[in-house]
Length: 148
Image (tube, rainbow, N blue to C red; front, side):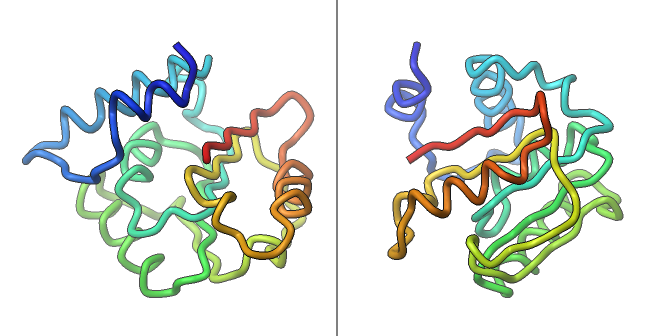
């Protein structure tokens, strides 16, 4: 199954049941589908572009990456994302946020896993250049996961 088929069969509604088990199961399935066993992200550095309020980020945070950077142009959404993560998985000391346009985000870090779900295609300015910039943040041997 291709990843686009996953989203067709599992539309992103961001509705989580009381304990989030169904949402977590969908996210685990997606990661397995793209060849990223969830245990792979524990202790790694993860960067997510466009997390919005962090509903998908909750699952990734639950995998206990060493560092988890969230980049979004909406500071209120980032604040809500961090709060949602804290409320769902507890301690969010490893979570960093940065309010930035994707192409302007800069860091000296490189990341094991960089994800941008459903946000690249809505960039008004040269999505190809933004994709190139995102890929430059992936460390050698790392994974870039993009959906549109």
